[in-house]
Length: 114
Image (cartoon, rainbow, N blue to C red; front, side, top):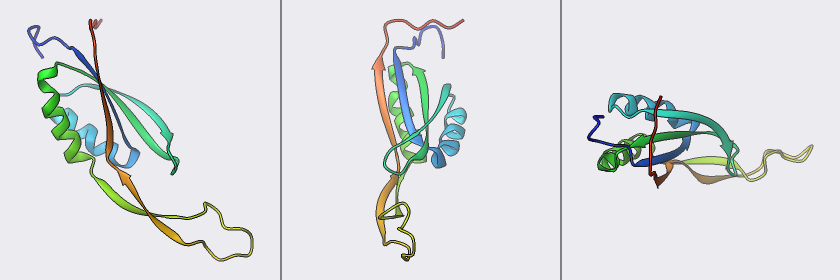
């Protein structure tokens, strides 16, 4: 980043904990700088990571290609019921879509770094 490339976007990338290491490695290689916030949630209560990335809008397409390459959706099988009632055999499994990423871009008026 140079002084002629001001940061005018704040990007929030929410990604599965399983896919976060690969994404973080790719972002470092491509010289994107980020802050990591651990979280969890969703119906699977899977660990997730939120990456905060400040960048110039001209690099947004490049960032999106890195995120798409590292965070692909996949099918996972989960039990219909988290714990079967006592004395019953394990419950049937269903397919669920997992992985991928949620990306939010917010315009910023001013970026200050100390």
